[in-house]
Length: 216
Image (cartoon, rainbow, N blue to C red):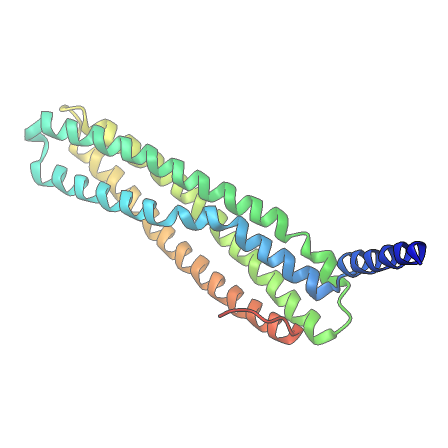
C-alpha cells in the first residue's frame, strides 16, 4: 500500500504540473498582458515628479521674464536653477523610456500566442489589441524624441540667459523654437493617452470574451 501511495502522489504532482504547463493561449495572453502592466509601473512612477518639475521650471522662467536682463545676477542664479531642473527632467524621461522599451519587448512576444488562438472572435480582438499597443509605442517614440530635443533647447536657453550680453533676438528665436516643439509634444502626448485608453478598453473586452475574471 505504501508504494501505491507514492505512485499516486507522483501521478497527482504530474497532473498539477501538466495543468500549469499546458495553459490555453488566452491564459498565456492574460499573463503576458499583466506582466506588461507590471513592467510599466516604473513608467507610471515618473509622471508626478515630471509634472512637478515642469511646473517648477515654468515658475522660474516666468520670474526670469519679469526680471528682465537688467537684473543679470538674479537672472543668472535662476537660470542655473532651471538648468538643474532640466537635468532632473531628463533623468525621469529616460526612466520612462527604459520602462516602455522593456514593456514593448515583452508585449511583442504575444504575437505568437495570438496566432495560436482557435476562437476567431477572440483572435480578432487580440489582433486589435496588438495593433493599438504598437500605435501607442509609436506615438510615445515621437513624443520622446521631441521631448529630448526640447530639453536640449531648454538647456541652451538657460545657458544663454546666464550671459548678461546675450542677444534678445537670439533668445526670442530660441523661445519660439522651444514653444513650437512643446506644441508638438502636447499633441503627441494626447495621441499616446488616447491610444492607452483604447488599449485598456480592448484589453477588458478581451478578458471578458476569454472568460477571465478581472477587477475593474
